[in-house]
Image 1: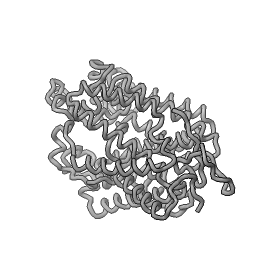
Image 2 (image 1 turned 45 degrees about the horizontal axis):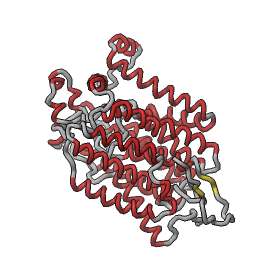
Image 3 (image 1 turned 90 degrees about the vertical axis):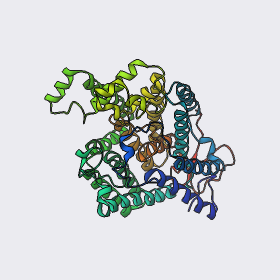
Image 4 (image 1 turned 180 degrees about the vertical axis):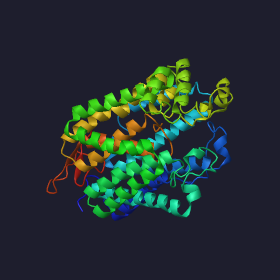
Length: 454
């Protein structure tokens, strides 16, 4: 098999890196506690300042091994880029953490968020080439899909929402697999559909087809209407973006701005809500409107510095506030909107930097990647995941989710698009350069990665 320039090539190294890759993937896609108890007493109490010491130790240890492994790779310069923007975002989050109700908890979560970014970026630097990346992803996600189906069959009281669950009894019958909630399961299975389509192009035809069909079937039974409706729409948008990048970028920006304006306007405007209802649209968007009204009211009080990183929801202060007497939304786990959540976390500056990092810069990466000589199928995979995640964030809060597959997988796509934007296929007869060409992600078999300044 042709090796990537500068990648670890020893057989021992290959075995270790494959294990590390699957370990990272398993942690975020399966976790330390699959099939969580839907009737745990902690579900009805605020957990804003709580922490799991064992989980933290596992993540720190895993991240340490990841860092040592990547620092031995000639592509280590590509870790956590763009450095300047991410450094500014980190400094701002550290500053706003001073104003959190529990600064120690805010700083702990910021550190955890950095480690998640490190692991996601490392997923692209650890494999030796695109073939190994495709193979390991197929193994890991194939196991995750099978585990969810096993739960539905053998542990339905844990893998399917029940009327006896402590919360959200109205979801009874919706599949959640080994995930904690049907919305997470549905989004994860959409990602699995994208990976299945990529695996078919990467040579794993039968496994890719099986992944695609089984994941799509799970999405339908998870009851995740948002994810199910977005799946075909994102495939069409990605197809448009590939052929007409400028038109695709315009559709993306217009869609994100327009959808968020519609959702938030419906939350605060009775007349607009009535108009949506007359068109057959639920103006509360499954009662998210109550959460958005509470969030917008809080943002208006602290629009610049916010409330500290992940330090507003699920706190004793919010549970015991005067608003607890007027709305159930004080018990919400998050804003159910990734963009609103950044205003809560760090105010307008945080939203601006996150929007540049996750939306504006990747538009440029995707455009350059689609024009370059690289693995088109892998670029398409990252493009689909990125687009889906951005629109999912209009109704959920995936950004900086320190557990679960959604934020982690989105990060893989964002970092992957950046790497693909500067990748080029290398002929097997081409000599291995000594300087400055340095490989990076498993963008394709026989890739050479050129460095990009921040």
